[in-house]
Structures are given as C-alpha cells and as structure tokens.
Image (cartoon, rainbow, N blue to C red):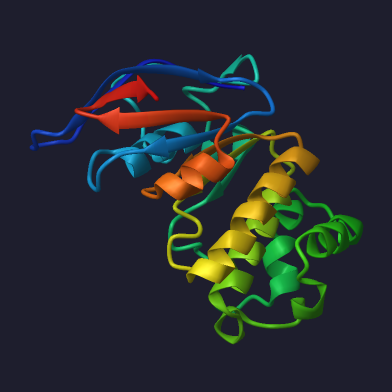
Amino acid sequence: MISLRDISWQAPGANFGLKEISFTIPDNTYAVLMGATGCGKTTLLEILCGLRAPDTGKIILNEQDVTDLEPRERGIGYVPQDLALFPRYVVHDQIHFAPHMRGQKNQALVEKLASDLGITHLLNRLPDQLSGGEKQRVALARALAAEPRVLLLDEPISALDEETRDDAVRLLRDIQKLHCLSVLHVTHSTSEAESLADLTLKLQGGKIHYC
C-alpha cells in the first residue's frame, strides 16, 4: 500500500510546488500517474523514495510511516526515467547490487529474476551492449532484487518504439501480478494508462485528481 497524507512541497525561489497531495494506492494495485511535463510527477516520486523531503505531510508505505526514513529503509523499488544503470557493471552485477549492499550473496534470486524477465542470456553484458528494451528489463530486475512491496516507475518505457513498448506493457503487468506489488507508474501515454492501470491519477496545478 502507498498512502500520501497532505504532502506539500515548494520549489525554492520558484512559483511551483505540490499542494496537500493525498491519495492511497491499495495493496497489489497498478496505479498510473499522468500530468503535463513539468507538473511535478518526478518530484512526487522522489518524495516517495526519500530523495527529496516534503515540507509537510506523511508518507505511509505498507502501514508504516516512512516520512523520516532513509531511501534504503523504505522497501521501495525505483526505476528512474533514465534507468540509471551502472555503466561498468555487467547485467549480473546490476541485479545483484541490492543483495550485495545488504551483505548477501543471493545467486538464486539473480537467476530467478533474470529468468522472469527473459534476460538470462545477457548476464555477462555491459549496458552499452544492450538494446533499449533490454536495458529496461535489467533496470526492472535490479529494482526487484531489493525485494520491494512498492515499485515506482518514472516513464520507464517512453523511449521504446511501438512494438517494443507493447511487449514492455505486458511485461510490467505480468511482473506486478507475479510479485504482488503496489505500483505507481508515471507516463504521458493514455494508451499505457488504459492498458496498465487499475487506478489512474492526474497531477494538475499541484494537486491530485482521480480519473
């Protein structure tokens, strides 16, 4: 479950902000967040992740108040818009990053995620040897390796061509169901929202509207 309660944030020195944002995404729900470029969608994801602090309000994830917790303590998987793959890590090490940071050696998890996402044959490749669709799958696998209950996706498939995007939409839906995740997916695409969303939200004028 993802719940924001009266979240507000004001950009320093600018006439832009989020105003008393409140919404709840139930367990095992795929939510899509839409809105114009520059309306604050990425800012809202960063607040959820703990990369940016709200001025007011509370963030509740799976019944826990995480407002003051560090990003690594929140149990969130996050795929930013640029995917942020490590340029010098092969795919295996990208996926194993979260277990490694916890002091674990979880080869079985790496193998399972690679299998689930169809990237087993890519485990020894570097990011610059991957296609856009392959990079997207690797970024998803890396996020899921943290074993989150909540997954945040910032326009993860916007750069893909139409055919690859259709495959990615099916993959995202399958992954959400397989891992029983609460997902918040940012997109500009109405067709993506229609294909994926159990719940559609729109950010406009600094406020959330239910669609």
